[in-house]
Image (cartoon, rainbow over all chains, first blue to last red):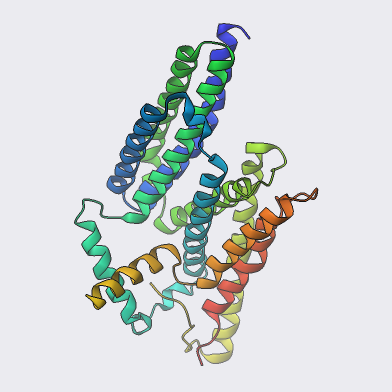
Length: 259
Length: 68
């Protein structure tokens, strides 16, 4: 492999990983809270820097599969929660929000959340999503640079290619940030739910040693498939709600529709 | 002290598990089955998408069924 080929290979591989991290960060920032999301990015980069500085080339021995499993599981649970609320709202069920259904435990939870926010993070969802995305994908970028670089005996060039890829994706992320902020809130939350669910399935299954057909390209099928299922469910629930309203006069209160 | 611990636990339960605990259980079970199948020669990538197609509509059905 020539020097140019090494640069291009590392650059392209790192672009893929950086886009995955940027997608999570933009989703968390746009749908939740940018300050907390960026704090998550900063903390994630800090953790990465400490890990790389402490371990050096031994960083490639970190069990990435286990990390993917945990991050994937949490992303999938978060994503399904968001998607569930977005589908309920889009189908009209969320509009039947009933404050009486909010449990006392949730009130206590909110108080605990306020206490946590004193540490400078106002939205732990946004912080956690960004942090996990940056740490996981950042480690993959480091692995790629180390693997390609050490094989070609040119780690500095591989590191430059990796940093260049990350900078390009960060610049692109800033460019799409403003247009995304004009997307309606529930549409954005729907898309975020779809993305988190798709990424969660992808990383979780990889962490559990499953192999996706097409590797990272499977995400390009997985995300639209999740969106199609969710949109289909919105259509079904809208029809069900209209039928129920026609039969019962629309007076019932669904259970489990909260927050 | 107990109230604080309870509030702390409630925060983390709500943060990680959310409105429907069956979704969280299904995710963990789906990952466990994926891991089990991945140890064999059969493909395991389809298990989480299949779990999603089964569990997500069930969770929505629970949320929208009439309150008794």
